Image: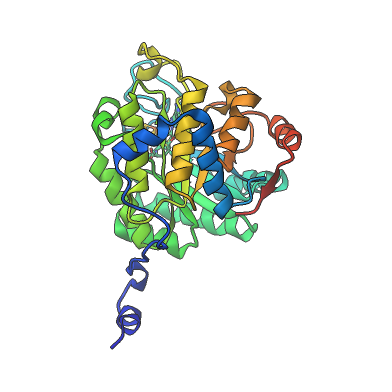
Length: 339
Ligand code: SAM
Ligand code: DTB
Ligand code: SF4
């Protein structure tokens, strides 16, 4: 009996692992990534652009719009996040899960403004039964508008991942945030392994993985190389890799911590390393663009970032106005894409 026949007769046949194409390496070491990041800048950018052009049109930008469908009051203690209920200085006000119709209205507006993907985020440790039901209805509704869907709801078990897959979910976002060593400085209420387990449940259910991290939390160069090496040595690379620059939000522990802001050139180096090591992934220049000038963002695009969050708000913090982004893409002779 062939493998195909065995897989077809098994429940959850989608769990059969699909190996990466032979040209895609999944064995990147931290030292190799650190060496890439440290290359002379012209050399690094040349390599990143060469890899980018092998797999993508370098003039094309994927755009996704975010919506916080359930804001604040989160029981996790992520030190960067304004939505944690555990930060003493409060943060954002907690709200209940939005109604499906409200989400649809926002999704329609995002579609009409040109977004191809709609990403819905909830400040949960993991979704509760009846909430997951509602999120599945949101996914079905947004898909019916012709958009790609992404949700980020915290930890998922295997059955929850399959329910979202059955609702037609395209992407699940769950970030590893930083290196395994630095992680404990940032979050204590869930482990790195918890995150990897959720990612493997998402992957096994056949949902595309969106997974990245944050730069600027006080981590060192070794941690940044560790973040990229961890992503690039996953058995299958995440299809989307958001690289966030920390947004310092008043009331969060990281806003109070005396850490240096990241040199924009150093940030571009991380983007380039992500592009070189994960050639077929969408590398997203995610949070932090509001504080970046057009020239720094342009360098990120030249280093291989080919996705952005689009619309004036991320989840709770500001993002550049759509008109500013469109003007920048026009100045660069770039255009937006579907997926
Ligand atoms: N609660 C869910 C979870 O953490 O899995 C989903 C939402 S959470 C806000 C999604 C991601 O946004 C985090 O993993 C983190 O990487 C990023 N993020 C949150 N706050 C941020 C900030 N202040 N600056 C940069 N990135 C941030
Ligand atoms: C990701 O990596 N970044 C997005 C999305 N995935 C969910 C979230 C950024 C949040 C920035 C802080 C805020 O707006 O609350
Ligand atoms: Fe909660 Fe997600 Fe914020 Fe962490 S990042 S506190 S899990 S909303």
